[in-house]
Image (cartoon, rainbow, N blue to C red; front, side):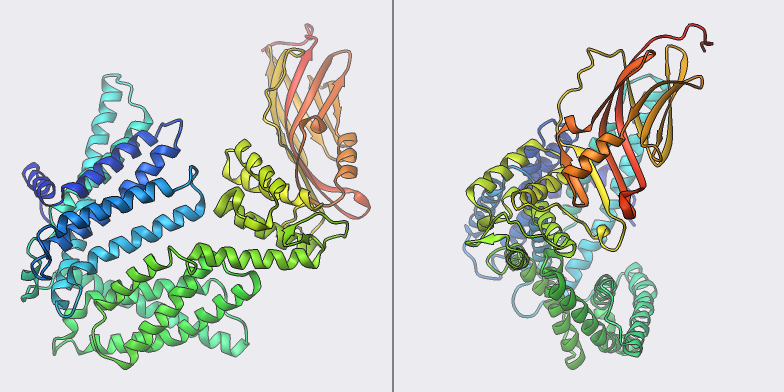
Length: 613
């Protein structure tokens, strides 16, 4: 590894600016927006700029590399300018067509584009026949350069962080915690990118000649990666034997293992490709053939596991990608078993095409997932009389717990990925307006998703239910849905308490010790001082009222006044403002367990006789 020096960093930066000015500009824009985003109040505009600029880094790099090969492909002089303008137009379109809020599916879409563009950097400069060796050397050079850049970036960050800490400790300079994150973002996006770009090979045509195989690469691929692949292939084979012997369906977790083994195995084969051509490296050819053969049953298991879960729960974006990659992996494995031709170009090129094609169109992950989940939702709603003229409607029939769990799961999946408009034509104008209004009132993603699902449930007379409710004691949970300020004019003290089955919360008022104890046997929260009861809040009427209003188990967000408990004694008057209360019931509606978290507002007559601390 080369020694880090200011001269070498300067030379790398100069080469980057000269060869890839727009790529480096994208990195600078990304760094500035990311640094500002750390402590920004309004995150959305900066997040959109950041994501767009991040896409610009691999996109303009790929365009620059293609322009550098203009003569090989007999392109006109202005081809580079046209390609850069087209790339800029794509980024502008991407930035302006995004919604104002960042939903999960937009992150997935961004990751797809990012992966596809990075893969294009690896293969696009060598499109066409031949130049397999040049492409291998080009990508190995980029890999080693990236490792160098990452190491230097970490060293630089550590050194500057220590300098900032020294200023803070020795000279009393106030260095906020956010400064360290902003420093890392600047180094990772600007310095790391500039240094990396400075090592991108210049004349790509010269890479086709003979070159020494990097020793560190051989050690990593031959003595670390390949043995690990063999170990996990043995595990997969043993698991296959177990599946066949026990007649069990493959576990859903098998997807992670097969995908990991496939990625590691293909990477090792690609890294060791030049070595396999040597006569004294026959074992590499045996390893390659064995890898493809042993991967065949693993791919079959993966396909069975994916198809089973799609049949049970429909297509989600994750299952969509897993299914597409399963088909791709099956083709690669079969090809490796019957042909000896190198896949150095085919693997990254096909993955780039898949990443970009599955991001847009009616076959995209979003489109297929939405159709599948809408079909599931329509089916279960129709069976329970909650669908009229193709739209969600109310009904009087009772929906079984299993169906409520399924409906809740689908709704939460759709709203978490696609926001308030995820139902599309399933929601009439009134329900769509309610969902949009509900989404605007809640900024926390999890609460918004649950709130939107609850709005749909209320529109058709159904309480939400979750998998945890199946086969267990009926569970009730109530939370405040209002975010109004707490009126304190009638009280002197504010205490935040939390509790479980029997939980004690200690606090102090004017030097005297108090204890708030929630007793679920009596359903009371008592406040005591020096062993004397000051005030008792009876939660029992509140629980009975909630139980009668909401007979179905599940999670509910309700108006705040239903969760207020008032109590008055000679020693105090108070308000127990419950934030959340939950309990499970055994037969006969007896409470089995419970928890409560609340705000306690008190006005207390001082006890002058007691000791003060």
